Length: 422
Image (cartoon, rainbow, N blue to C red; front, top):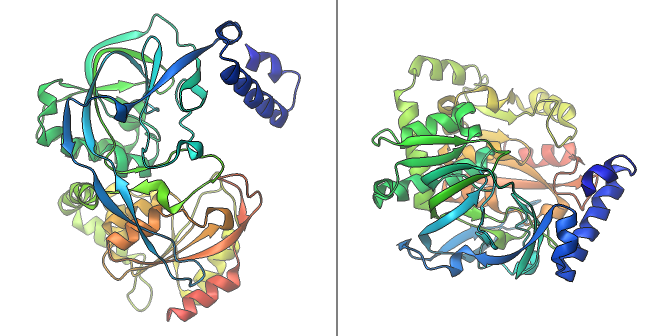
């Protein structure tokens, strides 16, 4: 109701701030009547890791995380706790495919990263619009929901995104299979996005090829009531949304063997793929010296804009680098291109997830806005697979926005490539 009224009388940026302050008022006041008037509710927060798991599938371990090496500054290594992977059973729960939050009648169950201080975490996905450490303001979910008797949840934060699917969600299947969790329920609950995105669907089918599983696709815009839901906590994770400090080296953790599981799935697919087609695609990318030097180009409709045309002109003219729109290739072709590439250049983004398939010794160059200098996701994955990854800082148009447009210094790119002998 509030959103509809404000839409017609106020500009977008004012509406956004008004909603934020209004939700904060409701959260602080703890007044249920005010919340109900605007189609919202108060919910007590319970963190998933505070519940008793049915089974601890894998104990907590120390994850080695690597900072970006920016402007030739040395990278550094820190140890982050990767929490235990647990199997949880939730009864009479309401779920949304795009959120790692689960709704009971009076509570909101949140899967968090326990090692990160809550003052830096924003777990407002799904029905949650704002929360503190004890309660949340939530959108009211309708009562006549589609009901599912039982199922294993394979959705969550970022389930529409290639990085989150490949590193956080798909790896759960290894734990489901090894612990015979499909014996508890034969229903696997995934987002509709998986069914219409070729790379998601093919990797899911490959992972499940030895199992007879009933895949139930959930509309990302809808909520579903599940009488008995089985949830495996996330084996690799990155803080999905943050506050106060936009990013930190400590905001992510990985289990390399879990990433290796995904690598093996895709490489097995690649080995069975049309080898003539793979060779054709890579040969088209080789330069005169027979090396594969690629630029990860973005299409015009991409969210973040930068001086891409100038960048590619420099790379193609002076360094014989070829542009690829990686999303135009099949998952097998993407893996093969990354496995054969000697040099990869491009902006930070989900395409770099394919470093999982790279060969040791590949050189990778990317750029990172100054306010995201501690974003350690791709520097860590690169380190795991022996990729020499370098970053150059760039100037964002708005240093308070995670996905702001920016400008990259062509001179810095040129100097970095010359320094590396290209």
